[in-house]
Amino acid sequence: MNYISTRNNQKNFTFKDVFLKGLADDGGLFVPKSIKQFQKEELENFKNLSYNDLAAEIIYPFIGDFMSKDDLISLISKSYSNFRSNDVVKISHLGNLKVLELFHGPTLAFKDIAMQLIGNFYQYHLSRDQKKINIIVATSGDTGAAAIDALKGKSNLNVFVLHPNNKISPVQRRLMTIHEESNVFNIAVEGNFDDCQNLVKAMFSDEKFSKSINMSGVNSINWARIIAQSVYYFYAYFKVGNGQPLSFSVPTGNFGDIYAGYLAKKLGLPIDKLIVATNKNDILHRAISGGDYSQKKVEETNTPSMDIQIASNFERLLYDVKGCNSEVTKNVMAQIKNNTYKIDKSDLDKIKKNFVSEMLDENETIKMIKTIKDEHQMVVDPHTAVGIGAVRKLGLEKNCVVLSTAHPCKFPKAIEDAISKTENLPESLKYVNDRKEKFELLSNDIEKVKKYVMNSI
Image 1 (cartoon, rainbow, N blue to C red):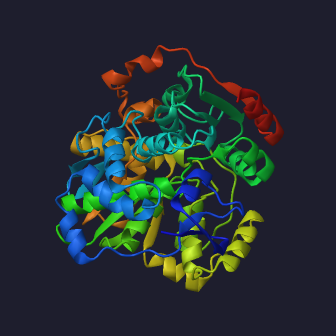
Image 2: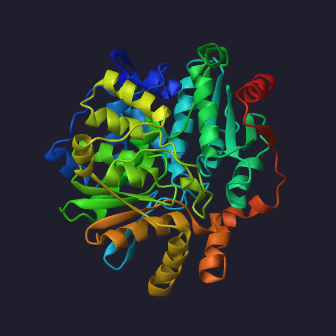
């Protein structure tokens, strides 16, 4: 399969290029040059597969030039062997509504599902190419911990994680900063997640710097994460779809997890609506409901993983609605950078064929956590509560699955505010509160961050 950049569709890339680079040199995101839908017969053959076997069938067409199918099957098995659920994910029921639990990996968040596989992809590549890689990633809370767990101790690579200082939960922070492996580096940035993300993008765009350190990235813009995350949409459909189209509600800030659902739909999965659920940092809700893609100041909320105003993966959707025209997409992204872009009616109509959106503020989120506990004796994390609340506000509970993206113990304050008690860490992670933390506090200054990276490798 060939890939191109959303900002230049004349140059072809292999999956290996796309995986290792993360972001195109022109600032665009990688997408397949074309996508072949699975036929009905193929989908029928998929429906009784285990999660691991299904993952191999979904992922292999995208990476065939990178490894054999047998090697992929082996890496998938290795990647998910440390999950607390034998099926990797679980499905629970809240009346008519289904909840897809994606937090049974080592760091209690959906990011583990893609990141554990990506970590083994790197190890596979580096066993054949001994050149050292430096992976740099920005996190709004969960990505960093998942990346570190997947990459710690691996030879021939370092991982640098930038998180916004004092703007993630203590559990999220400690899951990153307690590791003693010599290839792990944590940077607390004086700023918000968008600042962290912009620093990483600036390092990628500095061709001299990025090439000198052999830089790679595992943020949600990395196509490998998108294809790994698309698998659980197929799995959920085969478990609870009953042959009818399903809608999926996804709490999202960076548009990566829900774009994986959009990819699943493009591959032929019978998906009705993809519900974009946001907090009051609602750029995606404003964009999808009315075409307003103006960036506002990021506000801190009790759903910190969505405290984002630059939804990086949205560029992939815009590329699609612009008819896969890379020049037009490039111009749109320039307007977005200048905060002057509004989605026109014809493009918005195309988006609304697949997406709807809703927003919950902090009070609504707390009330939703309490309501779910009272009605169903289930405690959900605040991001999941936003996903459920969005479905209820839209009246779309029938034939709908909500993605539950994190374990509630990662957000003790929100849970305590809602139900007056906290959720405990699983026994396997009790050590998190006892270990010493290690991180570097840096200002939001690209030169200082680059200097720290250079001095650390």
